[in-house]
Image (tube, rainbow, N blue to C red; front, side, top):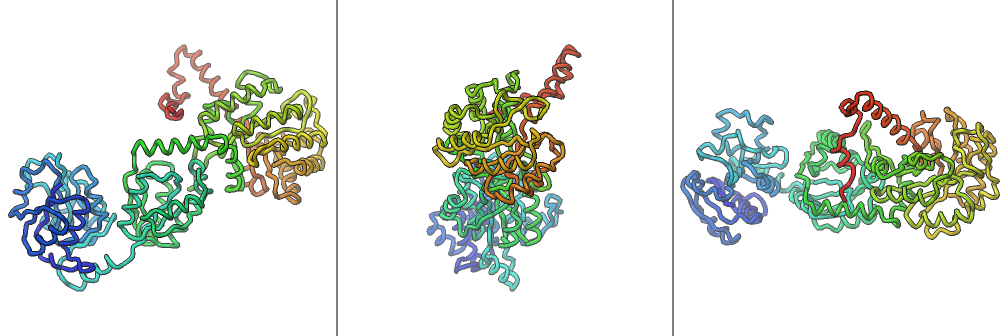
Length: 611
């Protein structure tokens, strides 16, 4: 690349630290390896400074003579009277078309392309830097400064000053420009630091003091995969990057609290959040910056394939049994109530893994998966009577684990014989399941929602406690949980029996208590939760709101519930949809009418990973 510096009447103007305009421009140009420079004026300083920065220079009479025949390379045109930041120069150089940096000091109209002819006559007052790409189709060089095909750098991205004369206004502005410590804020949620992050931090450092808000574990888990490294480790990594001056915690996904506290001049971010599920956070950030007089600067998001591979490898790491197993306990330490949905194969596992929504400025996703005995049996066309053995159940778990990373809770029905249960517990712990839930019934299993309509027999407290404690004794880690499911309310044994069993099961070592009901109103569930929490604040409380489905997760959280399981909704919704599609095809003797009921092949291919 070559540069042209137009005539300056103030080349000896000292701007900062005994550095004059010319020296500052040459220093910045040399930093970007621009070492062939044409001057439309001459001064004693040119030779001295060019030798200092190892620059080849030429004195020319006319700008068009310089450009003519030189478009085998990019051309950068500078106003010799301008002061601009390194970030501005970097922005202009990064464009692959004709580009220009706008002079924010001039405070010109946002509708820059409608500038009248008088403004064009004073072009460099508004555009102190212009880049002409070597591939530009310019047949008439006298028209290179016209606006129709110039890409404009947003005039709010960085400040630019034109030295008009040596008056008080200019002197005050320049002193403020260099002496004010500008604060730049970035938020980091990643635990994989790669070249793209370093580049954006370097750009941020060019703008001023860099403050990085490292998102807390709960904030990260609220909108993306759970962090591989916890907050303390991520804090240490960011703190030791040379472009970072200060590190603070960002406790929420929202930037607002931190922005109002430190009042930065700039917030720097990649441009990917313009179109993804975080665009509402972007809008909130812009509104907050308006209140404090700050500016949002966005840089192109890195699309390097190697960086994508790193992220993919990180997700692979999260699927390792030793990591996945402990994830449920970890997320329970982040959130008062976690949301679990059933999965019965790899496809429903991907739905549980990837489904997200944004509502009222908040980001929601499922925290884990429930492998239900009912759904596992139904997907195989088998009745829900513990007919599907553990070997088949493990095949389902493996299918889900192969394509997902989130924690898994297994519905193990009664757990079977104690002698069998302890071996099954060891197997589930080893493969990376986070928890198993067993119900306190014996005999041929019947679905709980039948209640007393069918014959169901509840286990004795003594025998069930023995099953729990036997399972706990064989565990190798503290990560795996055994949760006891109480059927007293289902079998109409009363609240007192349910509570008595709950406290005994907890004493036997159960990590959590699942209380079940088939009533549509949640009254008895709420009563149980209140009375249980009066004596036990440590055990996890689990509910499955299949019948009492009007209660929200926030309401459950207020009752002390830790885990809400949506146990069969994907299975129940899939069958009517598939049946209707099949009937539509049969009725019309073709598939066209069924298209609106079907997910596109492209969307399916996007959902299912290639690796």
